[in-house]
Image (cartoon, rainbow, N blue to C red; front, side, top):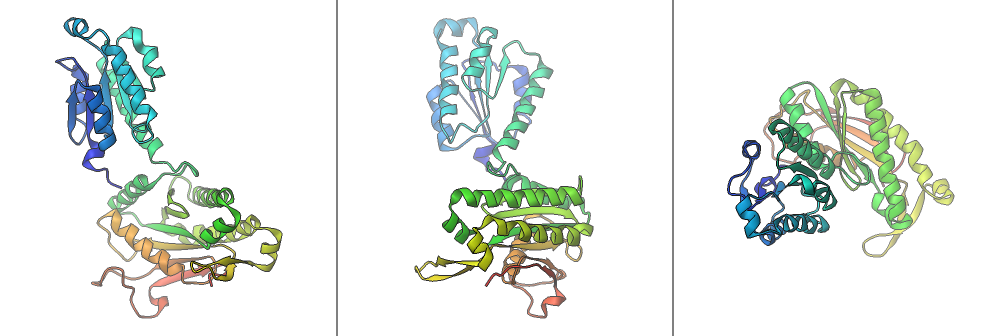
Length: 348
């Protein structure tokens, strides 16, 4: 997910007429628009309207400003507290620049980073960059699985495409997860999501150490990338381990018969099979990609195809580049363009 202009913008709350030299240099490295104001209410209102990339609150004052507004430091700290109390603005990284005497108070107000007004230039730059790295890492991680989210997934696909090395992008999705969630509840559903995350992570890192990536798109959707040579071993291992462990998420009765009765959208009872796992695999073996989004779109298409097959399955796109309408599969034999491996289970 590419950040919008608003997400890339920065806000600067200050009463000082001249900003620190190190801050001016750092601003130049950021994309987007910088908004400067001396009004704390405006900072809060604008942050709620369009979440900025970062907020810098300068609680430092010149002697003239200190005489004009002796409560400025406290106002700056209060603004930080207001921002951090709100769920929407609370994830925005806030830097507080404070007099040395207010250093501890700034962290107590919830600031993500605090710099003294007399900070050295090199130290300030290093700590600001570290603050943004922490923010990017923490805000793009799924809270349940702790795996990277959509933004890191897109960055990984873009990196793979740019590198030009043979790779596979694999979109994994559960079958019949919603029905399981409805029957057993959110808590058990979340356990299944964490189970899938652990299987994907352990298999990918175990069979492709240092060369794999696993991300969590959301819900029961995951995407992992691996070297092309590892597709068969990794995907076979994943579906086999999943089928072995998934059945133990059910009650003894459901596990024994291999299904349970659930209601469809019309309220009609029908048999719901045990969960299976579908993986759509895209490689650059026979295709040329210029953007990561092309990989993700094709992986989504292959995942949808895999979900039409019985059992836990992985399906590899074997088609070559050719003019075709977007989202339309070739009508010739599936063996001409896919390789599939099927484990146990049922999608019917």
